[in-house]
Length: 94
Image (cartoon, rainbow, N blue to C red):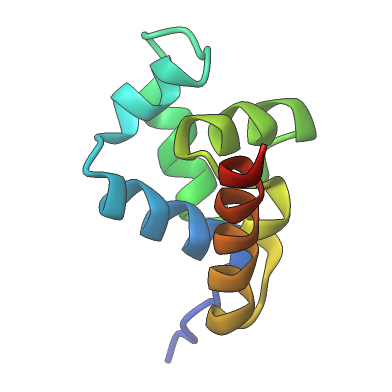
């Protein structure tokens, strides 16, 4: 019997954000500044937990979705939503 590996929270949040945004793995990678030949593969590996993006890449991905990096590490769905809404509320006041 094989056990199902639990995905890291950043992988789950990344996939949720990408699907909500309606963008392909390849296009997300390209928008985040990855080479178009590896963009899809790299995003796929981040989403499946094979690799963790470094902070610079994660910041660029966060910028694409207009969320703080902390969003990708919020273990609780409610906290993730609060982080996302806080950033958006803060931008409206500026």
